[in-house]
Length: 298
Image 1: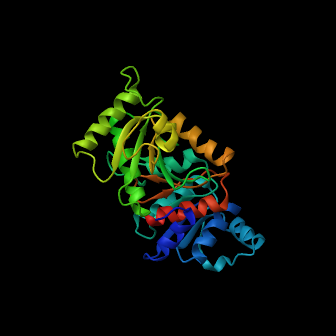
Image 2: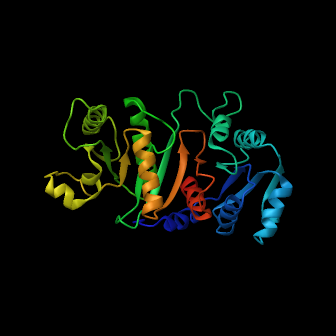
Image 3: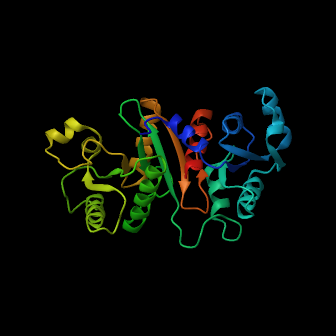
């Protein structure tokens, strides 16, 4: 069973190598992470950005720039557009965000003519946490894209959580549908949506996982809390996946894990034509490496 993010790197080494294109790859962390992924045999890489800057960064990091295909495009918006073009032309299998803002990256993906978003697709942010305070990996969503997902969008997020968990070797993931309480409160939309999704899973409308909700976070991940609150079932106290009710809860969880608890994380955008690595410009090269490996596993 995979319990560490570094094991995902080992997992993808056994699969056919993917080709990654990094949009506006002008920064140290992006180039360092892509270089590690290339050296590990996970991907071949195309760097789109300011060629002079890319070569300077490679020289500074003592990286052989010859191992990359470099496409010169000094404008960040055009770099993102060219990167999407390469995906659509089947020249690459994974898109990665470099030193451009998330809104520009997303605009390129969502462009109706040249983007990567299929008709009626729901794009969502999926993250995998290696938290030192938890006994296994946690797959979670949505932490960064959908502000207030409705029931239909939550169903899509849930399916992406299940798909990601299976891709990293969890045969039957246990997914908690989170709310502020594990009690059924008809005045809370999060509770109502969680109950509906849990019943849909019971009836076979959502397959491939053990699903329960509403569950509070403590009940979902802490066995003792689940026992004290007399919560039974296979998910309580041992969740593999967390479905957040809104972006505030998901985003705060993400940042509490990484900042307070020094959790490692890999994250990507699901629902586009290909997995799209979506990490913060301030994330470490290790986070970006794990995100590349996660995208390659998908």
